[in-house]
Image (cartoon, rainbow, N blue to C red; front, side, top):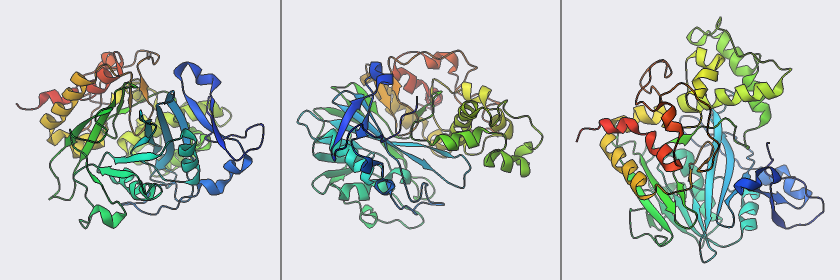
Length: 418
């Protein structure tokens, strides 16, 4: 069931407390619950953001935060909604992961917008923020690193190497990021508790774009953290996505579907749609999430896959997927480097109990197995990514440990020239 980020407690108090979620007790997931009506105040979700290229990332004015305790007393995730706006359904969750280290201090991976609600959640977790880690060069994470770090002036700020900006190359300090240092494979201040593996690829587009991402392994909780390299697709929508958005995207008369038909996008005007109506909001929400996931991964899938998303979505559900956008723009050019990074993760961290990415759901070792679906990873370089399958995978990519599932998403990298 969907749980709001902040709910009213039965009695009034100014303190936050952490309360177990009965519906998810078996998986040790909890939500931070505010003990006062004040915490529901919209003002605590206020965050103004008009940055981004070529368009700002929404929400522009207000961001709700959903908090889950993934490993009791050790690992938490904080999630907010993030999308490109225009009510087109290109939206998903963006996740920050927090580790409580052995000395009680906090290690923060890929910070999100530091709203009042977000900061209260961190206060409820307890412990001083020791490290703020920007593990990527991608701007949808970078834009929050400076504002977040300023809330914790005593924390060290570590950033992935290769930071860039467009159209002008400007230093991180210009964006309010004052790093203590850059992330490397070894000799990090947290290395006794957290291992680091760095994927740094050569620059593209005449030095105007660099993809760099660090993967991490928290030894005590047996958790792997990645950012954008691959995402785990699940049947359930992230809790932070508003239900109204899912229902509207799934409804036959919703804005996106109506616009697609009005513009005859890829011949979609006369194609059949999903068998749901506004009278079935639950059904619309399920269809809406499938469409939203496809939009998030492919931006502009074929109309037939958006109007009837079941088959396309089932080809991805229960698996890690490398976004075709990332594959086409970056990874296909550096298969050998990507393969080396992924092989190291698979070799050294195979025993992990979960892989936590910055988007989409968390992949847990004890997650329920998915029903069969037609196979393949994705067809990244085709007009219709579901008409031609690349890289194999199939049903086998749904089984095994979380790390094995993650590494299978990069099967195409095995074609790298030695």
